[in-house]
Image (cartoon, rainbow, N blue to C red; front, side):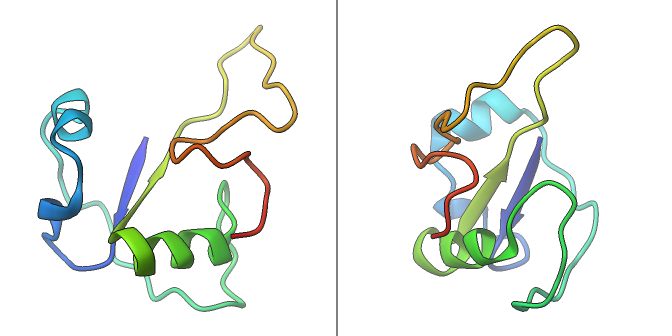
Length: 85
């Protein structure tokens, strides 16, 4: 899983329960996000909206082999995956 933060080291906005589940977090990369930016597994508009409103965005890994992701399945924020913000 990947945790996008609005600010470098801005972990104070991430719920304690999520931080406990994740374990030790480490910086992997820094990105400049804009509307034309393509992300491999997330819609940039949704990422930017969550960063603006919540300060973070959680990207979950795809379902493993043999698992089927149901259409409209809620994402980590409760919104159906694939919906615009």
